[in-house]
Length: 276
Image 1 (spheres, rainbow, N blue to C red):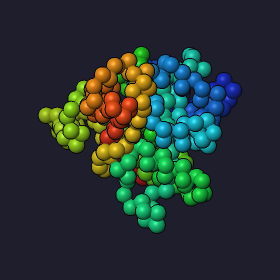
Image 2: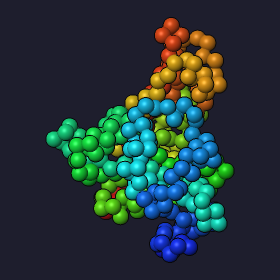
Image 3: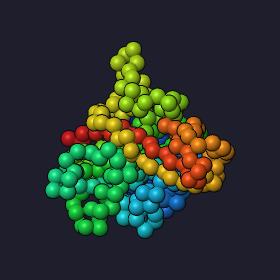
Image 4: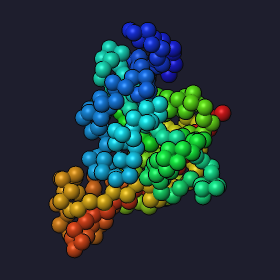
């Protein structure tokens, strides 16, 4: 990848990347606020399973009243030939870490949910952030597998560095784990290929870009819903209590007909990208 400085048609300075899909413009939502609505449209949004959009903690970041405050920490990738049609998005959040005075000596086992709660608390209490956590990178399905996710990781790193931070963390979701929902997560992320690289392609991508594994976050996302909601989200019938295999889920979903609910607890893997 070749990173260039350039200007858009209005003369505004932008970051331009020469990637495997051609030239891409990378911009924050502070620079291009008009792109924010576009990254939540179907072309990008369908890259994740529907049920993943129903973690209640997400509202502390993604609800518009909150998201507007994090525009410097969100990025869009745009094909310059279609300047109003984002092809990828990346979101991150600033938080105070480490912060022993607030019990933050180590990254939380609550992963994605907990770092959003920490960041939300910090903002309400006017606590100065000292680190950034990636929250997601999502690429339009038609362009997946062509290196755009690597572009967005690098863009998140560069953006955190530009904002004055020295570390980017992330509770990452191993891309291929959904093919083995019954394999214990810790066992899965320890698996290596013959060349010593991680078995999972997304973990491998992060490590190739300089990240180091910190630890497993076993309770990173918790998604709870009634059986009617889960049927709507997945198209599955959920006709018996116990565990259910749901397409796209990394672990089985726990189902209770008697209590009329299902619960999904997703593990993630904390990684750190040093920025020094």
